[in-house]
Length: 320
Image (cartoon, rainbow, N blue to C red; front, side):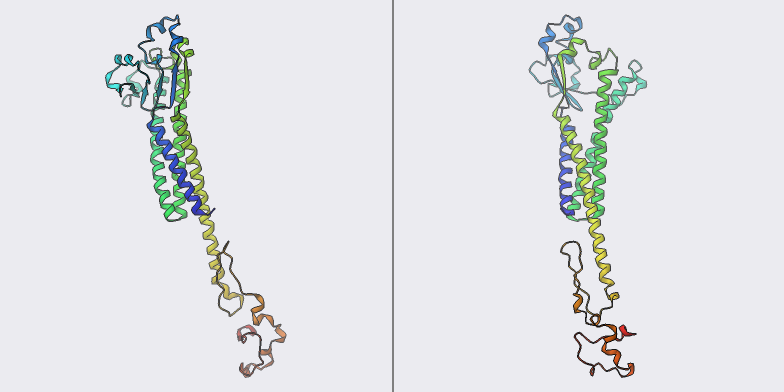
């Protein structure tokens, strides 16, 4: 496959990466929390009985970057929440408190704030990856129209930067999840898995959703697209080197000693130069000692009276 084919394939993978990453960024199915409420109703834990009908953590839900949604008809428990956080009647805005810092909330642990910072970085890195993927798609379109080594390398660089931000975003997401499940001990934060009652932990099945999967797919496609762009740039560079080599042979063909017209170039394959057959070089076919020109004194050379030769008359240049 030539450079154009690699560029086309890279552009397709980059477009898929952009689509997958945008879906992951915009949808709310990163994580599912499926709650077995029937099992919770038989629990004897006091905290469970007090919160089973009012606390959002006791209901099945799915979560994204900005929203946490509760699919189902029984959403009356949301009426007790801040109404400014409600979206579409069954979703709650995930407040990451962008304008606040640790200094203003001394009653919260550093681990809790570390989780908030990781979630913020998760969103920011995903957004930056979309920006670089969009730029790579534009650059890739230019590379498809104008096959250029520089444009191909630029496109590959942009895609690799986007892949870096995607990988960083996924790392931040898993870091925040680890803190929530194993480190944070703030009992006042009911959304933290580590402080839930054991009965709630047992009754809740946590799993990743399709938004999480398509984002990883976007990362894989961006990595493949970047590699293909670099391969295309290498192919273009190799082709340019071969053309320069052919041009060098063409320009220096007269140094071989022949006075025939330069050979025609043949680019069928790898830049091979089609040469004249050796047997057609009349001057070189004669041994030096048998060249007829040497039989005549230099001052009396008259090519019109020389014996007939197989090729064109020899030039004085060869016998000096």
